[in-house]
Image: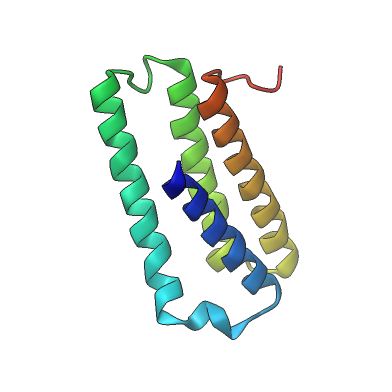
Amino acid sequence: MALAALSGSLFLLRGIWMLRESSQLAQRWVRIVPHVVDTLLLASALTMVIWSEQYPFVQSWLTAKVLALIVYIGLGAIALKYGKTRTVRVCALVSALTVILYIAAVAVTKRALVFI
């Protein structure tokens, strides 16, 4: 859970810096640390899946988390790197943060349809 919180916090921080057009985004650690944290998060998730024997495409809530993670990665890339306009980047940032909240809600409730 700590890695998930750290990953989301780093994404939010980079998003704020992107909105402010801060030179902080160019720092070496900002390009490296989030990827290390996300790699550790993915490795721990895979370990938990194997140990718990709850697999994506068998458990609907876990499938929802995996698919939402893919959406989050795409939106995050648009927000921080590939969005051509500020409006596109802001919309992608807000959407990615919403997906993070959805992933957290699914993790807590173990239900894919957490808002119904």
